Image 1 (cartoon, rainbow, N blue to C red):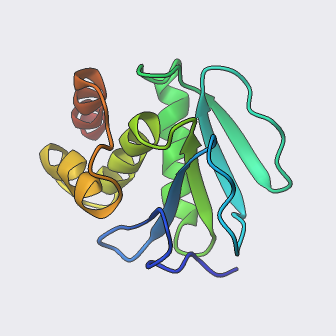
Image 2: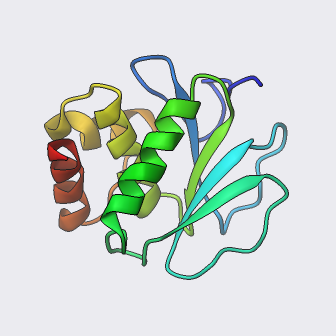
Amino acid sequence: METWDPAGAGVLRLPSGRTVRGRGLRDPLPEGLTPAFAVHLLGSPPPPVPWESRWLRWPDFRLPSDRAAARTVLREVWDRAPYERLEVACAGGRGRTGTALACLAVLDGVPADEAVSFVRRHYHPRAVETPWQRRYVVRFAEG
């Protein structure tokens, strides 16, 4: 299966060349290709989608309810990204999605103290909304 066009809307290209689309679920689904796999970062279960997806309980403006599960799911996204169209999405597409994308950047080799800035430059300037989300990215690197 092909990956995302790195020039596509909401697509973050990691230094390794892996691509992951971030988006807000409140927004309409972008035209064109659909994801092969999506991770929904929400406080309550998301509506069903016609592609493979996983719900990671993550309340708005907070951190994942199960940090071990978050690490496992984000690692799966990073592992699958060279071969598949993957999407990470929360309601608005900035805080939780940006935090998850910054964690993927850490897995990709971006230093933890630079990962939020990397995502803000290459995905959205207001990604990662809270101080505790920024700290989560740094701690994610520590294991």
